[in-house]
Length: 484
Image (cartoon, rainbow, N blue to C red):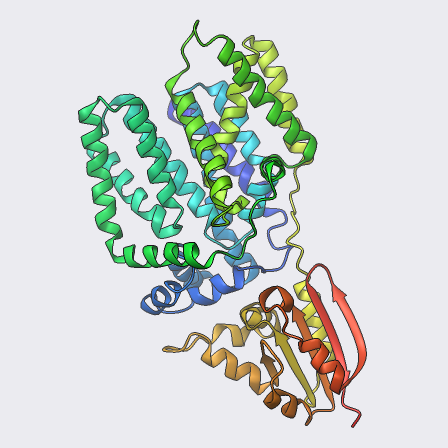
């Protein structure tokens, strides 16, 4: 009974997260980069790794998803359960870090802030790596803080930390930032502890050896981003910092409250700096949150990367720092509990259990299918939209991956239905279109992917527009007829 009592908060928090994150798990369509991930996860292991090395996707999540869909299939429910479980398990380690290195009254409010974060719910509903990356980051920091606190780790925990450090970068290239943060914390606070330095160095060397097969891909991807930039735009100044806190905090008023709370705690700390020393773990959290938050902001003026999902690994430190700040500002038990309840209530009432992905995919594909007959040609731009369209157009086509060809079979199946993916209207495609009485052109962000493509203008100059429909916030559909 004592063992059960000790674990009951963890179990209750996990179940609460599962319950809240399952309510609208399939309400939003599989969209954004989810179809890309699911499609590639169907490939054999060797091909999956081979294709992904050309994208900004290390293979760990897709390899896990590959095994998962072998058993449970590729339905919306199936593919979303996996990230939901990773996200729900993350709250366990938020609580463990709070309780182990601070106290239970810090652990529980921080865990509830995590639970009622719209951002965390969004990524729990997203069949992508980010919930797994967050979970691995939390496990890594829990074991790393244990190493710093106790001065050593058992052999079993050392092996687990070594494996988690390697898995971090197999999950996401920004796992390297976690390595750098931990090295910075160690050098800033424990540089004279040679035994600790040697132990941590040994763990990191072991993790590095495990990562050797992927090192070349890591270097190539960083070089490509540095040389060619990313699809993101640079920050728009300090406003971007506020917007990111807003993303972490659900709503503008909550974001302002969180910023004020952190700043007030900082001011009080500076005033009392000569009278009391900060708890080391609190300073570790500051480095975990502040350094990457500001560093990625400033780096984004050269290599844009300041995006909420790329910063998801610092959000646990944010929630813990909020509660620590509240505890520092309101040391009395009654005042602290009142403040905690109000802060949690702010998060809970501003949270969305069904955050919108802003992609009307089901309606868009239904429109194409409803207007299409054997004499209709369908043109879609950009080609990168192929897997997303196929997932809702014909699931059987989506499932039929082909060995030795990334999209070859899917392309042939769709073209057999007169569905073509293009990036421009060349003479050959115009000639082909001339053989059809009706055409449907689906613009799925064509101008963003291929600026100046002129596809719509080329079609309108040759054919008559009969119907035009817009599905927020991305899809423009045009039905044209050949009157000649």
